[in-house]
Image 1 (cartoon, rainbow, N blue to C red):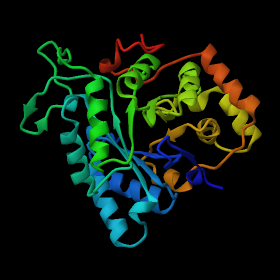
Image 2 (image 1 turned 30 degrees about the vertical axis):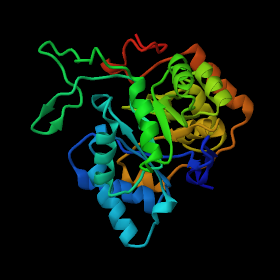
Image 3 (image 1 turned 90 degrees about the horizontal axis):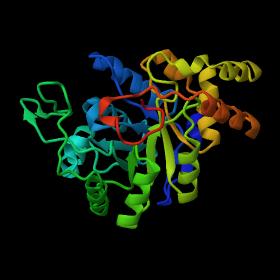
Image 4 (image 1 turned 90 degrees about the vertical axis):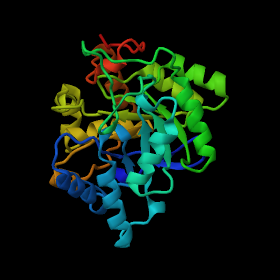
Length: 313
């Protein structure tokens, strides 16, 4: 049985796949990217696409979606599509979402997330909005008058307009989630964060489980080089279950009802998908404990510094 068939339920009542296809793409061969996405949708049977304005891949995704819809191979209702609003659109998220919908060739997304709880100054150049404006010394230009919660509040209004079926956040700490809930009375549907056996974030996991917030794990294999595949306990479990190490990590997430978002442009690897492995509760806990004893955060972009995350510095 494929992991792509597993789901959990958002606090909106909608079903969300527990395995999504990540669409960060490092390179300029967008034909390769499109071929990868087609393989994910048509061969590996992915039902979820996780993307963002910042990734720069949404036009290519839109072209693939238009193709597979017109070919009659997939229906729009069969897919769960997520996009995100980058901090340079902190107080005009409708601009970001409208751009994403146009590029994706969609009338709505199933989920829109605030990408980071940051507020960048608005700077335009010949290519449009500058994603990360920096001064002459290379320092990020933050908007001193900005309030990150403005983005979440405005996204809730865009949901009312039907442009998104659900609203969530990304890279929020427990304190930020508390503030969002207290000031809006609306519990985010999702919080997407870096999460894997080196970074189980047990306190955040327990908090979100109690609040009914679905956690999503980006960089589950450890980002570039997939270092988490080399964890001795992961290798030991892979040998026990006669499977690939990646399947152990994917199923560690799935067993905890955490949406997991691996990415790849290895088309043959994508076509194989991920198998379901029934890890025991003790094995899941042992992977949690490994991370608590050997924590490591792999994604350390400078805009995330100072937000209060553990194991950042």
